[in-house]
Length: 262
Image (cartoon, rainbow, N blue to C red; front, side, top):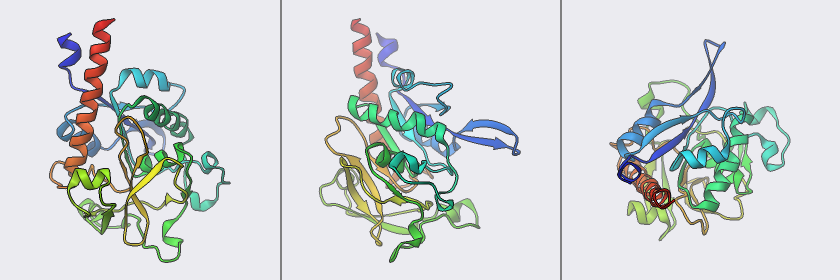
């Protein structure tokens, strides 16, 4: 029993498909994601190849205690929310769509924890029946939320705008603040929230930045910014990853008791 309950919770980190040197295909995640999961959430990071040829939702649910839905350059294919693709929608990764969208719905139903980041935030909205704007900066009154094209990583991940939380929302309660500063590195954003998507925080231009799934039995916090950047040092990022880690530990402990009883 001790081997089931004393191990670190396993967090599946959603990978992205890349081609090294434009010819060698890999599944990869940013080191800052693994650092945040291991060093702040206190969990064991496991990179997930998001291709339905290799993994199934059922396997992932059994293997992992929680999931980090990472950012990524490819976008959710607009057919997932009933829209024809255009050049503005950018590149896609339909293999990731095929794995992650049903995974999110299964986690919501089971109460299995996930933390959504950037594309992951957008995936949660789409999985729950919402839609996306292909290019936020083209909407009237909106700012450019995209990553600065030049500069160092420190400059690209620098805090750029405030996010204001709804009073009494999960984020307000967790962080103890109604407004925080965040980075911003995204082109797309929520258009129509899914029926159970609760918008907990917005940027000054009204862009949704923090959400959770209404009446979900587990941890479903998701953010449009990138809290994994120096998560151990940032006063906003650290509590989010710590809370996610506690949720994964609670899931692991419950699974451990169930397995031990079988």
